[in-house]
Every structure is written in structure tokens, then in C-alpha cells.
Image (cartoon, rainbow, N blue to C red; front, side, top):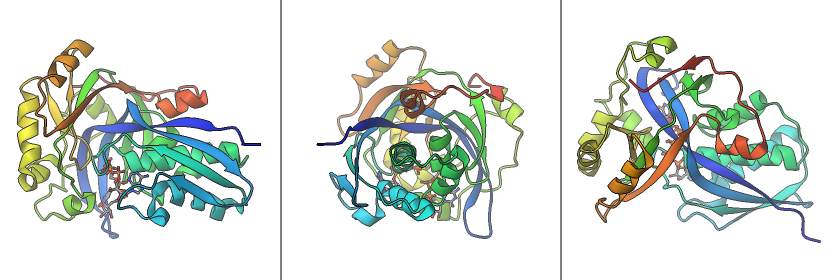
Length: 295
Ligand SMILES: C[C@](O)(CO)[C@H](O)COP(=O)(O)OP(=O)(O)OC[C@H]1O[C@@H](n2ccc(N)nc2=O)[C@H](O)[C@@H]1O
Ligand SMILES: Nc1ncnc2c1ncn2[C@@H]1O[C@H](COP(=O)(O)OP(=O)(O)OP(=O)(O)O)[C@@H](O)[C@H]1O
């Protein structure tokens, strides 16, 4: 008898603002960022198996099985709990890789939450987030599932309520390696820390400290930002290459999408304060510490 299949989303995230405030001894950069989810993303289908094998299909071109964050998340649960169950996972990949939308991290978080449920592990969200942090700096926010003010390397999270506009997200067709941006000599990495309240109340304009460096190295990103800024305020997410414009309504998004350069890939999406993953799992919103309108 085939087992039941659990189907869950792995949404994208945006960094609505991103400040780099320093660099730790281990090379990782300390950030202050506002994370928000989008109502679009990848989809994963899970089916438990008894033999401990972790199957994933289709493979992602250029990412060996053992390096895939989905497989690494499942293996991390095996190591943490001694569980001997396995799983077959089917991945419907929609999000661009290395786009600053956190697709790999989101895939990992969805796997952690799905297998926690399917394997009957009952680990706390904090423990799953700590496991996830070893896989990537963005995994904890996807595990906790609420829009958040993040500090540290992105793991110290405070839930917030942000405005939930429509966005156009544009991928300018170039791949940006996160590590190369963080290693750039000219990167701004000394932005003075601000309080969460000040960020949320618009006391400092929302910007992304990686944007200048990424635009210098990738002229196509600069060209795309200039084009999209002609319609609405536009910013890089994460270390790029994707950018997003915050719109007044869905019709404006549709109108922009009709004019996008054929060499670029763009889609519309709505901001969400509760992750679509947690909505699918039936989780309630935790109380938010702060509320904001984009300044
Ligand atoms: C910039 C953000 O997109 C903001 O959401 C994320 O912090 C990036 O998170 P991520 O893609 O999950 O990054 P990781 O896979 O953890 O790290 C990739 C590489 O980026 C650099 N890195 C990453 C995050 C960080 N806070 N400081 C860093 O210096 C490190 O060289 C690291 O080896
Ligand atoms: N399941 C996965 N999905 C996507 N990328 C994966 C996956 N597993 C491993 N990777 C690797 O992780 C890299 C980063 O992928 P991801 O899509 O998370 O980047 P990103 O959108 O730039 O994320 P971030 O905003 O966190 O920097 C990919 O280039 C790929 O080599």
C-alpha cells in the first residue's frame, strides 16, 4: 500500500531592509533585517518509507544529492533523533536559485517541519530552528514562520507585523554568489545598529547594504533596478540577484509584468506575515512585537 503524501509549500522571503552592522570572528556578518514571506514558492511532497532511505526527485542540476539542503535537513533530523524512518520527497522547484529569495533555506525548513510531523519526532520549534541554522542563516525564520526583525546572522528573531502589499519580483538573469558579496572589500559592513522600533517606525529609510556592491559587480542588476524604479520603489533582496518593487495594488503589478524585458524573469506576489507553510500546517500567528508601514 502506498503511504499518504503530505504536500507543503516552501515560500520565498524578501528582505524588506538589510543593514550589515559588523563581521564576526568566524567571518559571518552581523545583520539587521526585516524578513517577510511571499505567497509564492516551491512545493514539496513527502511520503514516509520504512527503510531509512532519503529519496529526492528530481535532482537539482549542479547540486549533488548529499549537498541538497532538503537531504541535509532530513539527515540532520536522523543524526539528532536516531530516527530510522526514511522518506521520498518530490520537489516542484519554482524559485530561482541564488536569487536572494531563500529558496534553499525554505526547502530545508519545510523538510524539517514535515519530517518532524511525519516521523512523529515532536521537536520544539526552537530545536528545529537551531538544527536549521547549521544548514543556513535564513533557515530559522522559515522554521518559525512569522515575518520578523532579525539580528545576529539572521537567527535572533522578533515577530513583527509588516504591511502586506503586492510586489513585482524581478530576476535579472544573472547569478550572484552570496559568499562573493560578503567577501567584497567595498561592502558596507559598519552600519550603526538601530533599534527595531526605529526601523519599524520609519526612523531610517529601508535600504539594502548589499545593493551598491552587487550593482557594481553585476551591471544587469543595476539596469533592472533602474528600470523597475521607474514604476515603484525598488530594492535588492538578500544578496540578489532578485529585486522587488512595492506596489499600490495588483493591477499595477499586472501592468508592469506586461512590459518586462524578455531577458528577465518576473512574477507578482503578495507579502505575508504568516508563512504559507505555517498556514498550511494550521499554525496560528504568534503575537507580533511591532508593526510597521514601509517608510
Ligand atoms: C543575506 C541573506 O540572504 C539575508 O537574508 C542571508 O543571510 C544569506 O543566508 P544564506 O544564503 O542562508 O547564507 P549561508 O548559506 O548561511 O552563507 C553563505 C555564505 O555567505 C556569507 N554570509 C552569510 C550570511 C551572513 N550573515 N554573513 C555571511 O558572511 C558566508 O561567507 C557564508 O559562507
Ligand atoms: N533545495 C535547494 N534549493 C535551492 N538551492 C539549493 C538547494 N539545496 C542546495 N542548494 C544550494 O544553495 C544555493 C543557494 O540557494 P538559495 O536558493 O537558497 O539562494 P538564495 O535565494 O540566494 O538564498 P539567500 O537569500 O538565503 O541567500 C544554491 O545555489 C544551491 O547551490
